[in-house]
Length: 212
Ligand SMILES: C[S@@+](CC[C@H](N)C(=O)[O-])C[C@H]1O[C@@H](n2cnc3c(N)ncnc32)[C@H](O)[C@@H]1O
Image (cartoon, rainbow, N blue to C red; front, side, top):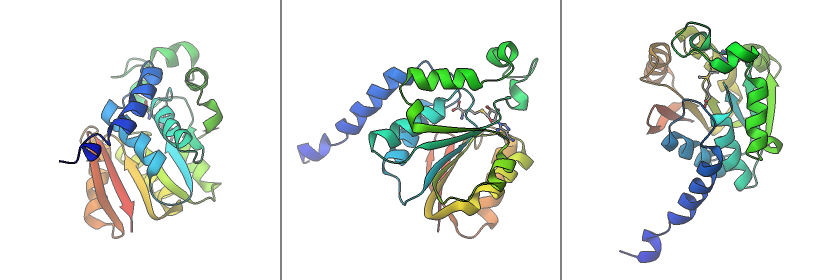
């Protein structure tokens, strides 16, 4: 075994540990391994175009995407969220959000978290509905991360609204596959019927698909 090759993963691991220290307090539902995958894809993923995230909440996934692209000197992250929470975050629901209850929006905490991490200069937030924002969008996208409302129709709507902007060889990451039934059903249907999309990686509950 070549020792240099053996230790070649230390540099990216060191970067991950650096950012992990900084971002560990941002609450959210992204596992560390998924965070590292987003970091690597934002830093080194294929193609030229924008990075777009649907569903930011308090900025956990946003920060990891921005950390990757900023470290590599690549493009800013566009974060699309109405910041009113998903159905499960509302009062009395399974993942009731204390911040949403107190502040009625997660936007100020999202901005605060990005400022604390010194990543606010690398994120362009759009406060709005995913479908309506897509209707006014026109730029090519190289990396799309979908983590909005988890109902079947919503997962489908987010994909159909945004996938047309993804460049050939570009990547779409679906969060919560095999966690939320609606997301899982949509993803399985997509993989069965949609020509032109190929699963290239699976990291915890994030599926990474490449547009052919
Ligand atoms: C599961 S959270 C995102 C978690 C985040 N990616 C993380 O890493 O912690 C889902 C987010 O999607 C947003 N959302 C739900 N439906 C939406 C819609 N139709 N348009 C825009 N944002 C939406 C909610 O406000 C919520 O912040």
